[in-house]
Length: 229
Image: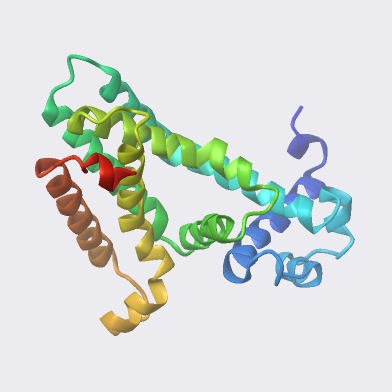
């Protein structure tokens, strides 16, 4: 029997706190978000946080675990397809490029297309800048899977060894091209003289990144050994 079936009110309280945590930790970060504000946002008693999670750290960990679970559900199939195609000796270059485009489209959409996804992305980026004890949950459950998906395709498309430093740097540069639209959102909106991005903007961002990644692959030239080191 599930927790919801056994204790629906307790399950509801727990879920409200996780939802509030995803919003507030994304907006303000872990340190700047107090338990009092979390409880008020969730509309529950302050004592519910230590009761359900043992404290703010436990609630934050629960938020991180839910984010990773959601990311695995939304992007996991795309990552798995990329790895599968990259590992298939019979896969054509066209198939690998199509899988690469899907990686970009799904990643950008997941990162930008809703307020919730933006808050979640912000938490993930905060973990890169100021990692907490929950960082390994993000790394093992999401980042490493994203990296391996790109590595599987780019290794085949460029001929670089899967464990080479150059391949790792190329992948990180591509991921940076996508995440800048989350990290630099305030400056981007100011430049565009807008309050929010529309679906048309997100679509254009996606196509620009795809175009740049395809150009990297099409014009690939390995770095010299001296430059790579």
